[in-house]
Amino acid sequence: MSHIITLIPGDGIGPEITEATVKCLEATGVGFRWDRFQAGAEYMRRTGAPDPLPGEVLDSIRRNRIALKGPLTTPVGEGFRSVNVAMRQALDLFACMRPCKNYPGIPSKYQDVDLVLFRENTEDLYAGIEFESGTEGFGEINGLVAAHCQRWLRDRSAVSVKPISEFSSRRIAQYAFEYAEHHGRRKVNIIHKAEIMRLSDGLFLEAARQVAREYPDIWYSDLPIDAICSELVINPERYDVLVLSNLFGDILSDLCAGLVGGLGVAPGANIGTHAVVFEPTHGSAPTIAGQDKANPTAMILSSVMMLRHLGEDAAADRLEGAVVDVLRSGDHLTADLAPAGTEPVGTQAFASAVVAALESPSPIAR
Ligand code: ATP
Image (tube, protein in one colour):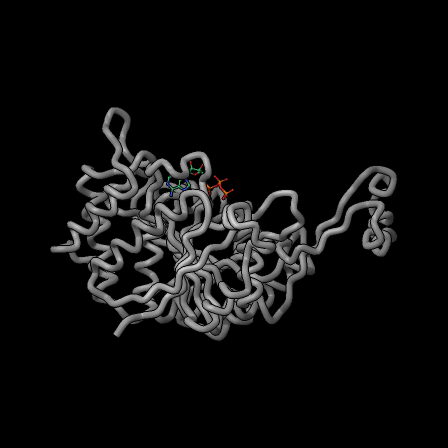
């Protein structure tokens, strides 16, 4: 049986890392049929298409329920909202899951980091509700703004709105606790700034605390966003599952990627009730695009998450083991990981080394 997967190579380094990842996936022996689509800023520029996220891409994901995706960039200054945000909202991909784990062979200041970050994906400042002074929308909130500071009325100013609902806050917390319960994770931390955003983050925190009471076997705590930033750079190995609202989740994901070797090795998945889109944490890295320099590890590890989601656990273990073997050997490291004075390998050579290692990969401890 073949799995039918929507494949979106994306922009910048996307096509190169997608080619490398498909090579590795097909070498596992699992059957795939790729429903391949173009999207994003480069696709628009190349084809003159009117929309960076064509409806047929969303239809394909709705049909197949699973997609593997490279980074998508948004055309700048053409009035489009972020393509990635639009996709998450259109498919209600409410949970962004980003595991961050130290692998042997990946240079890092830390050892023993093994945490999973869950970011609420549909609300918060990503809702795109913004007003600029002098516009009609701004007029509606003039009174509120003026009550705080007259200068905001006289100067050019802008307001972004952070909507948070109890439903979505409960939903992301529940997903994270369920994950913890089913994957042997013992601790969940809810991250917030409720002492400042008393209503929006206050609601997020209150909803998460209620959910926590439903999982008495999981140790629970909450921490302000500023406190967790300092905690994570000092003792990251103490953390297990983190739950965050959208913007804090975006920022902390990159910090956590930095704990385990950088953006080139940080995988992810955007999860909804009807579809899941697997994609690396990083963006399109345009400065190294088209040069065979990008590290495909983040996307290959995202595809390992996809294999597990498909129930192909044996293939997932083998592919993860093969990636670890290649990294540990140190002979085939891409430019972002290769130590000074050593010769880095290219994107496709890294993938070929992983394919070769798939013959007899080391077992993976899970
Ligand atoms: P975008 O505008 O799409 O977010 P960006 O370059 O601003 O692109 P990222 O793509 O997330 O942001 O990456 C920031 C930097 O991290 C890149 O310039 C690159 O140096 C590095 N980087 C990201 N992904 C990779 C990768 N897969 N391999 C090697 N380096 C990477």
